Image (tube, rainbow, N blue to C red; front, side, top):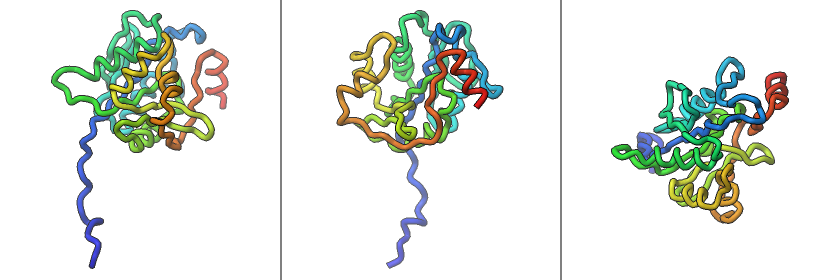
Length: 202
């Protein structure tokens, strides 16, 4: 009997995927907010937003400092960015639950200071995600972002996190939920002017 499955149209994707770009930090070690830094002619904020867009996310939420603009994302201002990454993550999840919008099945968290993580890496992590699981991109021997999980798991992660943490403690407490997926790119984060010089000269 002939196999006609290959002739069938692809089933529509019903999972609602949201990207959260955390970009409200002061960049104290860098000497300037990292979201505003330009690498290869593109701001780090725009690089992260573009990566999420290339991966096909249904919504892109960027948590930013006051006065920041970006055309391709829903911007949420963190009024107290000095409270750390955890506060930005909580704001992103709150925005993902906007009344009247489809609820997020999964939220992929990206950091603004990792210019080597592009659309293909985000796409790989999203494609590997399964409900009830946590997907983390792996770059060779290094874990990195995005980290993808359902909003309820992200809330559990926030409950365990320190002020400037995201999922680290949650992942350590629940290794049984973790799926690692090989991803292309470089997860190096740019924290200092020396990091930036090394990146731009390589």
